[in-house]
Image (cartoon, rainbow, N blue to C red; front, side, top):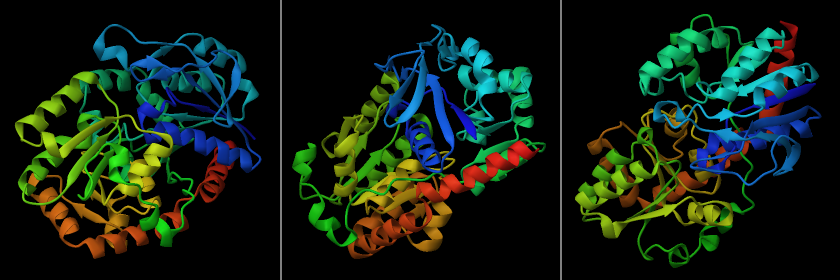
Length: 393
């Protein structure tokens, strides 16, 4: 099979769901599926320094980038036009058996579904949580317009909607009753650390530019209003009598980051919170290993790849019930879960900080659980099955 993956961006600054496509394609190719990616050279506020229009090797997989152009109108900026993408896809789509499309309400994804339908090429759509109620309520007028003009037809005509959790699947079925839904989780490449040596390998906090001798609470994801950071900061302001430091790692809209920093100042947490910016590579691994608890109390999370990464590094998570992995974490005691409000987050943080032995135990169970259930080879087999099923329709 020849499978084309279409996504608006694979920039690390766009978060785990975008980066996951690279690992997905790598794993599919190991299953002898000829998979490649077409995307834009988006890199958040900037552009990736890559060759455009030509198929190149990018992080070990074949990727074709097209130049991104963002409209000056803020409401349309995330639509991110990619010059030359539609012409190329219209000419070459018959070279592929199926298109796996990631995201909605964005130029590359929307156009790819339209072009696939026009050429009778089946496609699978992974909506990246954009059909969850919280997401649909953001810039609601724009999304209603897009649904009316294009996206509802795109959704209903997909061979399958690829949801990454049962929670996301339920929400898609509720809002789009004609959609055919399959649930296949995302995978992860396990870090090369021995479970029994995690404590020995944890780096000195000073190496990371954060205070030593304090339990490190870590947020590592995009800085975005849906991530619930305001509520997390308010909860931390209730725990001033505890020893902790909160590291906030990630990139986002500069205006929103300034808003978060202002909130930190207003809550008198300036000395106990560090904004680290985007962290990747070995520094990212070090942060996960240094953390005593990973915190993601989000308003909506169709999967939570950063939570999975933390667990794989032997760090227990604290997540809100709106994070799709919350039920697994709760049922298997792999970390802590809570309602998304200030008092509930504070209570969960308090429990994790007061019971360090139990938190370490849950962290160890979390790593083992991820190794058993979320590795890419098993996920690739499931994707292979959904592709073959799509081609038989």
